[in-house]
Image 1: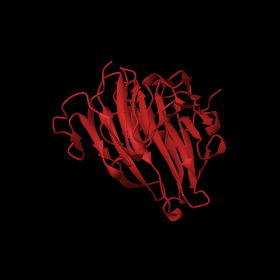
Image 2: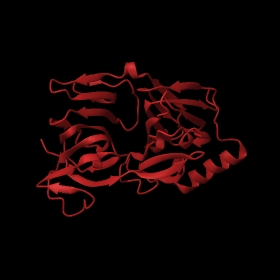
Image 3: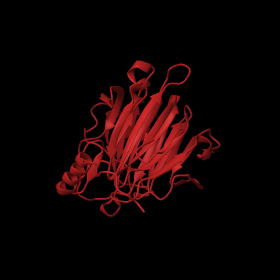
Length: 303
């Protein structure tokens, strides 16, 4: 067994998206190889309705999958194929845009005005970029949760973990998407497939991840104690940790416990031509997608 080294750590940065939604972006629109097969990760947590109610009006997607996980509030969604629905607290939507879809997402807060969720974009390999669009809308009650003897809780959204399989299936990158809580003072070692890229996104609490090797001075934003990456007080909140290769990670929860998403997937390793929510392999394919959008041919007829 080998502990994955911590390659880098960064804070999600505030940004505006859609019609003026205030959110924090952990990564996206940068080096597409960094988290391959994942392209973008947004945390749209907000307690001020005026900062999110304008939402994400109609916009196109092609060549990717979008994964929306809601923790508080609701998200109303609709698309050009006539699909409509609501995502509530604990629900997830895994949308395969494939050949193209026009989509909108309109967040609404809970009774206290709070809205909290995440959106992750996963790339599609060249052979599946023009596949039929597909939805997997999963209710929170359908997501298995494992509670270990030490109080560690793991929700298995996608992939297999500790003998449980998540309800999302048929995904090209064969990803694992876990929502993990480790109670205060507990140290936990968690398996991660050796051949996957992996990252953790800490959104509650504090703690530290064991590091397999010397940090080599690359993680200047945080403090190392020996070979451990320490996330002090609130510093773990909205923190992205990228891991190197290995088959496990070890996390030590602090005084408030620690909650994070642990996401991994098989790298696709193909060229990326990217324009907003349209991701193809070549510039010619990207130009064709934009021409399709401008001429009303973006939505393909699927028999």
